[in-house]
Length: 311
Image 1 (cartoon, rainbow, N blue to C red):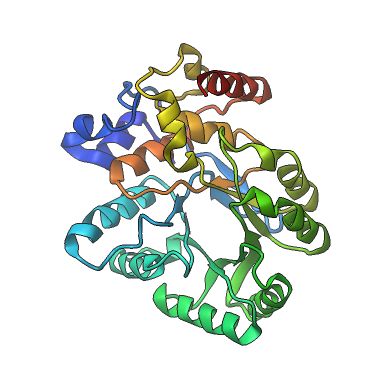
Image 2: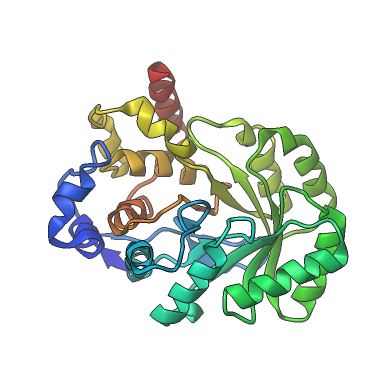
Protein backbone atom coordinates (compact mmCIF):
# COMPACT_ATOMS: atom_id res chain seq x y z
CA UNK A 1 0.00 0.00 0.00
CA UNK A 2 1.36 3.40 -0.98
CA UNK A 3 -0.04 6.52 0.70
CA UNK A 4 1.22 10.02 1.29
CA UNK A 5 1.03 11.89 4.57
CA UNK A 6 -1.63 14.01 2.83
CA UNK A 7 -3.65 10.83 2.33
CA UNK A 8 -3.28 10.01 6.01
CA UNK A 9 -4.56 13.36 7.18
CA UNK A 10 -7.38 13.51 4.63
CA UNK A 11 -8.63 10.00 5.39
CA UNK A 12 -8.26 10.34 9.12
CA UNK A 13 -9.74 13.71 9.87
CA UNK A 14 -11.45 15.30 6.90
CA UNK A 15 -11.79 19.03 6.50
CA UNK A 16 -11.47 19.80 10.23
CA UNK A 17 -8.09 18.06 10.61
CA UNK A 18 -6.03 21.16 11.27
CA UNK A 19 -7.97 22.05 14.39
CA UNK A 20 -8.25 18.50 15.68
CA UNK A 21 -4.64 17.62 15.08
CA UNK A 22 -3.53 20.55 17.18
CA UNK A 23 -4.15 18.38 20.25
CA UNK A 24 -0.79 16.72 19.71
CA UNK A 25 2.23 19.04 19.64
CA UNK A 26 4.08 18.98 16.34
CA UNK A 27 1.41 16.98 14.53
CA UNK A 28 0.60 19.51 11.81
CA UNK A 29 3.77 19.27 9.70
CA UNK A 30 3.15 19.23 5.98
CA UNK A 31 2.86 15.91 4.13
CA UNK A 32 5.84 14.57 2.23
CA UNK A 33 6.36 11.79 -0.29
CA UNK A 34 4.49 8.45 -0.42
CA UNK A 35 5.79 5.42 1.46
CA UNK A 36 5.08 1.71 1.63
CA UNK A 37 3.42 0.33 4.75
CA UNK A 38 6.00 -1.32 6.99
CA UNK A 39 5.23 -4.88 8.08
CA UNK A 40 7.08 -7.44 10.20
CA UNK A 41 6.85 -11.23 10.06
CA UNK A 42 5.51 -13.44 12.81
CA UNK A 43 8.56 -15.67 13.38
CA UNK A 44 6.56 -18.89 13.84
CA UNK A 45 4.74 -18.55 10.51
CA UNK A 46 6.26 -15.80 8.37
CA UNK A 47 2.90 -13.97 8.19
CA UNK A 48 3.44 -10.23 7.73
CA UNK A 49 1.70 -7.79 10.10
CA UNK A 50 1.72 -3.98 9.90
CA UNK A 51 3.94 -2.58 12.65
CA UNK A 52 1.22 -0.32 14.11
CA UNK A 53 -2.00 -1.69 15.57
CA UNK A 54 -4.63 -0.52 18.07
CA UNK A 55 -4.98 -1.17 21.79
CA UNK A 56 -8.43 -0.91 23.35
CA UNK A 57 -7.86 -0.64 27.11
CA UNK A 58 -9.96 2.10 28.74
CA UNK A 59 -10.83 3.97 25.54
CA UNK A 60 -13.19 1.27 24.25
CA UNK A 61 -14.85 0.62 27.59
CA UNK A 62 -17.90 2.73 26.71
CA UNK A 63 -21.65 2.33 26.61
CA UNK A 64 -23.35 1.53 23.32
CA UNK A 65 -24.52 5.09 22.67
CA UNK A 66 -24.10 6.87 19.36
CA UNK A 67 -22.10 9.71 20.84
CA UNK A 68 -19.54 7.28 22.25
CA UNK A 69 -19.50 4.78 19.40
CA UNK A 70 -19.38 7.17 16.44
CA UNK A 71 -15.73 8.27 16.89
CA UNK A 72 -14.65 4.69 17.60
CA UNK A 73 -16.42 3.46 14.47
CA UNK A 74 -14.66 6.13 12.40
CA UNK A 75 -11.36 5.33 14.09
CA UNK A 76 -11.56 1.65 13.17
CA UNK A 77 -12.65 2.50 9.62
CA UNK A 78 -9.70 4.89 9.22
CA UNK A 79 -7.28 2.37 10.70
CA UNK A 80 -8.39 -0.34 8.30
CA UNK A 81 -8.46 2.01 5.29
CA UNK A 82 -4.82 2.86 5.94
CA UNK A 83 -3.81 -0.80 6.07
CA UNK A 84 -3.98 -1.48 9.82
CA UNK A 85 -5.04 -4.96 10.89
CA UNK A 86 -4.12 -5.81 14.50
CA UNK A 87 -6.59 -4.90 17.26
CA UNK A 88 -5.74 -6.00 20.79
CA UNK A 89 -8.38 -6.26 23.52
CA UNK A 90 -9.25 -8.27 26.64
CA UNK A 91 -12.27 -9.24 28.75
CA UNK A 92 -10.69 -7.29 31.62
CA UNK A 93 -11.03 -4.09 29.57
CA UNK A 94 -14.65 -3.65 30.61
CA UNK A 95 -16.96 -3.35 27.61
CA UNK A 96 -14.15 -3.18 25.03
CA UNK A 97 -14.69 -6.65 23.55
CA UNK A 98 -18.40 -5.95 23.03
CA UNK A 99 -17.68 -2.57 21.45
CA UNK A 100 -15.00 -3.97 19.14
CA UNK A 101 -17.20 -6.93 18.21
CA UNK A 102 -20.21 -4.75 17.41
CA UNK A 103 -18.27 -2.18 15.39
CA UNK A 104 -16.25 -4.72 13.41
CA UNK A 105 -19.43 -6.63 12.60
CA UNK A 106 -21.14 -3.44 11.49
CA UNK A 107 -18.16 -2.35 9.38
CA UNK A 108 -17.96 -5.80 7.79
CA UNK A 109 -14.20 -6.33 7.68
CA UNK A 110 -13.57 -9.02 10.30
CA UNK A 111 -11.75 -11.20 7.77
CA UNK A 112 -9.28 -8.38 7.11
CA UNK A 113 -8.33 -7.96 10.76
CA UNK A 114 -5.96 -9.62 13.19
CA UNK A 115 -7.96 -9.87 16.44
CA UNK A 116 -6.03 -10.49 19.66
CA UNK A 117 -7.58 -10.98 23.08
CA UNK A 118 -6.64 -12.50 26.43
CA UNK A 119 -7.65 -14.80 29.27
CA UNK A 120 -7.03 -14.00 32.92
CA UNK A 121 -8.35 -16.80 35.11
CA UNK A 122 -6.68 -19.32 37.41
CA UNK A 123 -8.74 -22.47 36.82
CA UNK A 124 -9.37 -24.45 33.66
CA UNK A 125 -13.17 -24.20 33.81
CA UNK A 126 -13.04 -20.49 34.63
CA UNK A 127 -10.63 -19.90 31.77
CA UNK A 128 -12.77 -21.82 29.31
CA UNK A 129 -15.82 -19.83 30.38
CA UNK A 130 -14.04 -16.51 29.90
CA UNK A 131 -12.73 -17.56 26.49
CA UNK A 132 -16.21 -18.70 25.41
CA UNK A 133 -17.57 -15.31 26.46
CA UNK A 134 -14.86 -13.56 24.44
CA UNK A 135 -15.86 -15.49 21.31
CA UNK A 136 -19.43 -14.28 21.80
CA UNK A 137 -18.54 -10.70 22.67
CA UNK A 138 -16.19 -10.35 19.70
CA UNK A 139 -18.68 -12.13 17.39
CA UNK A 140 -16.10 -14.45 15.89
CA UNK A 141 -15.46 -18.18 15.81
CA UNK A 142 -11.68 -17.81 15.67
CA UNK A 143 -9.11 -15.62 17.36
CA UNK A 144 -5.95 -14.68 15.55
CA UNK A 145 -4.12 -14.45 18.88
CA UNK A 146 -5.09 -15.53 22.39
CA UNK A 147 -2.81 -14.51 25.26
CA UNK A 148 -2.55 -15.43 28.93
CA UNK A 149 -2.89 -12.06 30.66
CA UNK A 150 -0.46 -11.01 33.40
CA UNK A 151 0.72 -14.61 33.99
CA UNK A 152 -2.56 -15.52 35.74
CA UNK A 153 -2.98 -19.32 35.65
CA UNK A 154 -0.15 -19.45 33.13
CA UNK A 155 0.43 -23.23 33.02
CA UNK A 156 -3.26 -24.12 33.06
CA UNK A 157 -4.25 -21.53 30.48
CA UNK A 158 -1.37 -22.25 28.10
CA UNK A 159 -2.53 -25.87 28.00
CA UNK A 160 -6.03 -24.68 27.09
CA UNK A 161 -4.66 -22.30 24.45
CA UNK A 162 -2.74 -25.13 22.82
CA UNK A 163 -5.88 -27.24 22.66
CA UNK A 164 -7.75 -24.38 21.01
CA UNK A 165 -4.92 -23.89 18.54
CA UNK A 166 -4.91 -27.59 17.67
CA UNK A 167 -8.68 -27.37 17.13
CA UNK A 168 -8.31 -24.40 14.75
CA UNK A 169 -10.10 -21.95 17.06
CA UNK A 170 -6.93 -19.92 17.71
CA UNK A 171 -4.18 -19.18 15.19
CA UNK A 172 -1.44 -18.00 17.58
CA UNK A 173 -0.90 -18.21 21.33
CA UNK A 174 1.11 -16.12 23.74
CA UNK A 175 1.15 -14.16 26.99
CA UNK A 176 1.14 -10.53 28.04
CA UNK A 177 2.19 -8.15 30.78
CA UNK A 178 2.56 -4.42 31.27
CA UNK A 179 4.35 -4.59 34.62
CA UNK A 180 8.10 -4.61 35.09
CA UNK A 181 7.57 -6.44 38.37
CA UNK A 182 6.60 -9.52 36.35
CA UNK A 183 9.59 -9.50 34.01
CA UNK A 184 11.64 -12.13 35.84
CA UNK A 185 8.78 -14.63 35.98
CA UNK A 186 7.75 -13.64 32.45
CA UNK A 187 11.23 -14.40 31.10
CA UNK A 188 11.26 -17.75 32.91
CA UNK A 189 8.06 -18.76 31.10
CA UNK A 190 9.52 -17.57 27.79
CA UNK A 191 12.53 -19.83 28.30
CA UNK A 192 10.54 -22.98 29.02
CA UNK A 193 7.45 -22.60 26.81
CA UNK A 194 7.03 -22.40 23.05
CA UNK A 195 4.72 -19.51 22.12
CA UNK A 196 4.05 -17.46 19.00
CA UNK A 197 3.76 -14.04 20.69
CA UNK A 198 4.59 -12.13 23.82
CA UNK A 199 3.22 -8.71 24.76
CA UNK A 200 5.12 -6.31 27.00
CA UNK A 201 5.26 -2.61 27.81
CA UNK A 202 8.01 -0.72 26.00
CA UNK A 203 8.52 2.98 25.30
CA UNK A 204 11.03 5.81 25.59
CA UNK A 205 9.88 6.17 29.20
CA UNK A 206 10.01 2.42 30.01
CA UNK A 207 12.95 0.64 28.38
CA UNK A 208 13.65 -2.14 30.84
CA UNK A 209 12.03 -4.81 28.67
CA UNK A 210 14.82 -4.23 26.12
CA UNK A 211 17.37 -5.60 28.61
CA UNK A 212 16.16 -9.22 28.67
CA UNK A 213 12.62 -9.65 27.33
CA UNK A 214 13.08 -8.34 23.78
CA UNK A 215 16.40 -10.12 23.10
CA UNK A 216 14.94 -13.32 24.53
CA UNK A 217 11.91 -13.03 22.26
CA UNK A 218 14.22 -12.70 19.27
CA UNK A 219 16.25 -15.71 20.39
CA UNK A 220 13.13 -17.81 21.00
CA UNK A 221 11.41 -16.82 17.75
CA UNK A 222 8.49 -15.02 19.39
CA UNK A 223 6.67 -12.05 17.90
CA UNK A 224 6.43 -9.00 20.18
CA UNK A 225 3.49 -6.67 20.76
CA UNK A 226 4.52 -3.46 22.55
CA UNK A 227 1.91 -1.88 24.80
CA UNK A 228 1.65 1.46 26.67
CA UNK A 229 3.81 3.19 24.01
CA UNK A 230 2.95 6.71 25.15
CA UNK A 231 3.39 5.94 28.85
CA UNK A 232 -0.29 6.74 29.42
CA UNK A 233 0.35 10.29 28.25
CA UNK A 234 3.60 10.90 30.11
CA UNK A 235 5.64 11.14 26.91
CA UNK A 236 3.44 13.90 25.49
CA UNK A 237 3.59 15.70 28.83
CA UNK A 238 7.38 15.57 28.72
CA UNK A 239 7.71 17.20 25.29
CA UNK A 240 4.94 19.72 25.91
CA UNK A 241 4.67 22.31 23.15
CA UNK A 242 8.20 21.79 21.84
CA UNK A 243 8.62 21.41 18.10
CA UNK A 244 10.14 18.21 16.79
CA UNK A 245 13.93 18.33 16.54
CA UNK A 246 15.07 18.89 12.97
CA UNK A 247 16.85 15.53 12.89
CA UNK A 248 13.48 13.72 13.27
CA UNK A 249 13.14 14.20 9.52
CA UNK A 250 16.00 11.77 9.04
CA UNK A 251 13.56 8.95 9.80
CA UNK A 252 10.50 10.53 8.16
CA UNK A 253 8.89 11.58 11.41
CA UNK A 254 6.24 14.30 11.32
CA UNK A 255 4.69 14.30 14.80
CA UNK A 256 5.57 13.49 18.39
CA UNK A 257 3.25 10.49 18.23
CA UNK A 258 5.23 9.12 15.31
CA UNK A 259 8.49 9.95 17.11
CA UNK A 260 7.46 7.81 20.09
CA UNK A 261 6.11 4.96 17.96
CA UNK A 262 9.03 4.88 15.53
CA UNK A 263 11.41 4.59 18.46
CA UNK A 264 9.61 1.39 19.47
CA UNK A 265 9.25 -0.23 16.05
CA UNK A 266 12.84 0.75 15.31
CA UNK A 267 13.77 -2.08 17.68
CA UNK A 268 14.19 -5.15 15.44
CA UNK A 269 12.52 -7.49 17.94
CA UNK A 270 9.23 -5.54 17.99
CA UNK A 271 6.59 -6.89 15.62
CA UNK A 272 3.78 -4.41 16.29
CA UNK A 273 3.10 -1.52 18.65
CA UNK A 274 -0.47 -1.11 19.92
CA UNK A 275 -1.23 2.47 20.97
CA UNK A 276 -4.63 3.14 22.48
CA UNK A 277 -6.48 4.89 19.66
CA UNK A 278 -9.99 6.27 19.92
CA UNK A 279 -10.02 9.18 17.44
CA UNK A 280 -9.72 8.91 13.66
CA UNK A 281 -7.05 11.61 13.30
CA UNK A 282 -4.92 9.78 15.87
CA UNK A 283 -5.36 6.57 13.88
CA UNK A 284 -4.13 8.40 10.78
CA UNK A 285 -1.18 9.92 12.61
CA UNK A 286 -0.22 6.65 14.28
CA UNK A 287 -0.32 4.79 10.98
CA UNK A 288 2.17 7.36 9.69
CA UNK A 289 4.69 5.68 12.01
CA UNK A 290 4.31 2.55 9.89
CA UNK A 291 5.63 4.39 6.84
CA UNK A 292 8.97 5.77 5.73
CA UNK A 293 12.34 5.18 7.33
CA UNK A 294 12.81 3.89 10.86
CA UNK A 295 15.55 5.04 13.25
CA UNK A 296 18.63 2.83 13.38
CA UNK A 297 20.43 1.91 16.60
CA UNK A 298 22.49 5.10 16.67
CA UNK A 299 19.45 7.28 16.04
CA UNK A 300 17.48 5.45 18.72
CA UNK A 301 20.24 6.24 21.23
CA UNK A 302 20.02 9.88 20.18
CA UNK A 303 16.25 9.78 20.76
CA UNK A 304 16.82 8.33 24.24
CA UNK A 305 19.34 11.02 25.10
CA UNK A 306 17.01 13.74 23.87
CA UNK A 307 14.04 12.39 25.82
CA UNK A 308 16.14 11.91 28.96
CA UNK A 309 17.23 15.53 28.78
CA UNK A 310 13.59 16.58 29.14
CA UNK A 311 12.81 14.46 32.19
